[in-house]
Length: 440
Image 1 (cartoon, rainbow, N blue to C red):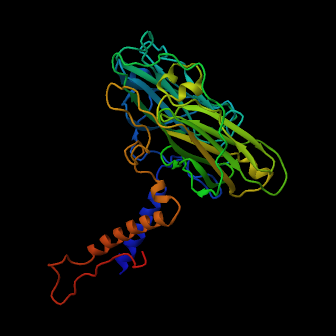
Image 2: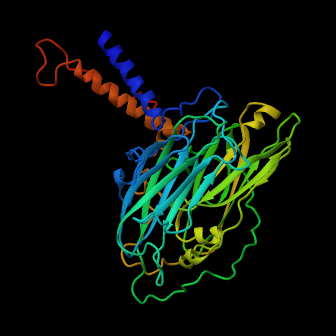
Image 3: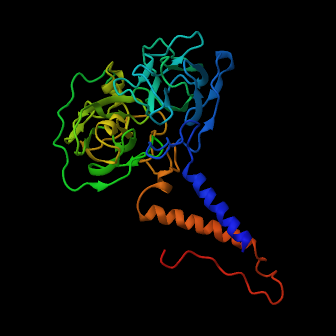
């Protein structure tokens, strides 16, 4: 029996390890702090190179884990064809806790460059801004193939360059990086369709949905973002936490998300208390919003996006250009840690209101398979397919799944302690069949 108890302890340790998957050095959450960011469990670890000649290869359709030091500039390499649009995103994950000080100018920049160091488009940076507290932030770079384009239009090797800006007074820890490369096939030759961005589109927000909120628990990042449908959803959020959600948006549809922060006793005022950010299916930040907090109910929403359309990519506006593809759109909500100082440390009520306008239309005439970005196209086929939220989420169902998994592992360990059926010793009874309790 001593051996069985030891194995049981091993099993429990394994379960604890599963529940902590995704934490990088500096990401372990102490009591009362935010959950660590859950990285894609299928991501390949790759070290960024200080010199371009040492850059490691990245492949489209893959996710990578890396890290970057303060003031760092890292090179990676990617092979591009001459027909596909390419998207490279980098999620920077700083350390957690009040000791991880960041400045509003701290952040990262991502660029795609040709072999001469010229950028393929406008470099994108992500900074903490007025919400100067640590949280996951994402930046991206895009290579768009255009009919009369002159920059980065040919096939061949290109560099992905990621840079980190850190003020001298900020924390000096390394940041974790999650790098994603996606590609989008071009359209068939001669396919009809506008080649310019829309000059106008409906921007009036609809009446927010009402009714009883359905309970939901947001994820820690893109990989375990909680799936939402149009309607009203209720969650809890602590100061310093960031919650991620995802909503499928089809061609021709328009997303209007918002987040309401519940009232609280006490008095005080926190500027930029609730910060929201909307990302498109390839993790490009497209719109933000925020609200101050004084203990009364408040609401924050990002600027509205146009209906999803292929032609949107030709716009110079980030909000318009970002709504260029159908798929999962990600809604990140962060509550400032300063709320705990002015009010108190607790879980605050969070209400999410999701509206999707318009009927879903057909995709454009892609020269190849229609790309599906995110998990809503077939839960488990997108990146981050086996999400930790499926294990550590709330509700009886997820507890049941975890319990069954643990019981199965224990049963296998116990089976090792007895001879196999058909080879047992004379007079010894067959090994008992270990199963979950009948109440399961």
